[in-house]
Length: 369
Image 1 (cartoon, rainbow, N blue to C red):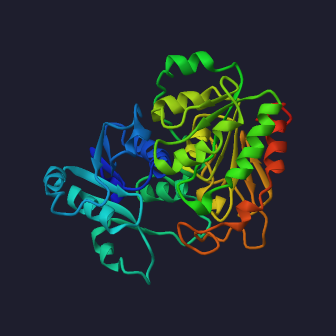
Image 2: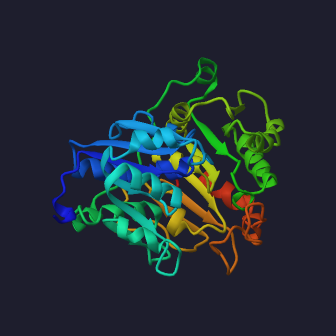
């Protein structure tokens, strides 16, 4: 039996990462459902991340695991998963994700670090072990390559859709305060090395408000996000400046984004959600290679990667990608000091005026959608 001949009736997609990674797995899920339309597809991921899949028509079930939970506390889940699936697709290279797939399915496809790494022992257990040799391979295409033994190569020319969560109604008070045209600004980043300086966001928001635009702040409920948003709240009052941080579900946030005239944000999961929601978007990138982690414009083909490694300004459809200056950009490291709390000089050097000019151009309709 060759992999091509398999008729899988149950599929588990393992994505134990953050909400942005979960969202960018949806083209893979769609491709699997297209290949095996009668199959049940479940997704296993960390608690709190799978809300990105709410209402996804290709998914039958979501299985949550606690981040950092040990094997002893996972015994109940292991018993539930044992050989329940025909195929497991492991969308990242972690050992833990691989073990879930090994337990759950008789056939497995997964990503490998490479021949010199310590995951050589996984190869005998994978029907398809994928080593990515292209340093610029986008994560959307990387995940889709897991289906290579079963999907015709011509699928690479098909338009891809990143599926946002199902829209949910906005809170009544917020819906009543929104103007016909508004701009959503998402300032917080999970990692400092991806954070465009708060002082730059203050300049941007002040200019938008002076232009007469309504600005809506977004952000999560956590302390780090709230600290960033708190530094922006004094720039205006309602209804000119609205703060929605920590108050919306992902479905409500998707609804807010869908109706926005423009979204502006850094290299973060909500930027990917904005693009998936069809919102005109300005994304701010520094050390991270956009060829790998740039937002995926809706309808973009896998055979036509959307972003070059470096350029001051790139536009693709309704998405603008701005990068900070420097010969080292993008370095692919965790900032200048290569750790989660590192500074990123290229983002500091990304001047607010560049973002303001692009925002005004998009809002004035001078940039084609």
